[in-house]
Picture: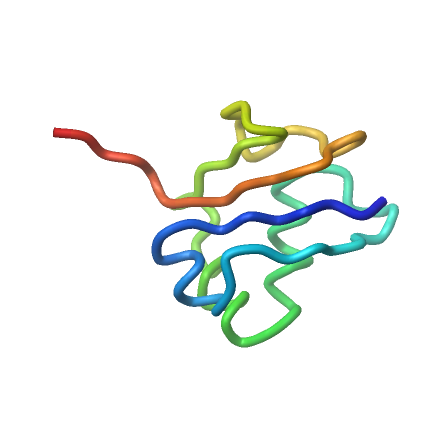
Amino acid sequence: MTVTMVYFAWVRERIGTGEERVDPPASVTTIAELVDWLALSSPGHAAAFADPARLRAALDQAFVPIDTPIAGAHEIALFPPVTGG
């Protein structure tokens, strides 16, 4: 299953790109597992995903908890918590 990953704010800055396509192994079934798997990809990924509790996620443009299953996903976005004013 190939999925488009979209990164925002400091997540994008640490990884060095705003978007990439990945093909996680079948053993990766949730966004949290995907984050753990991606953290092994590069030093930038490791830095961006060092504290997964600081991440928020969207699956196909809908906000979801980080433990959401990824089956059938086309796009997963990862970003820091959003604040407003």
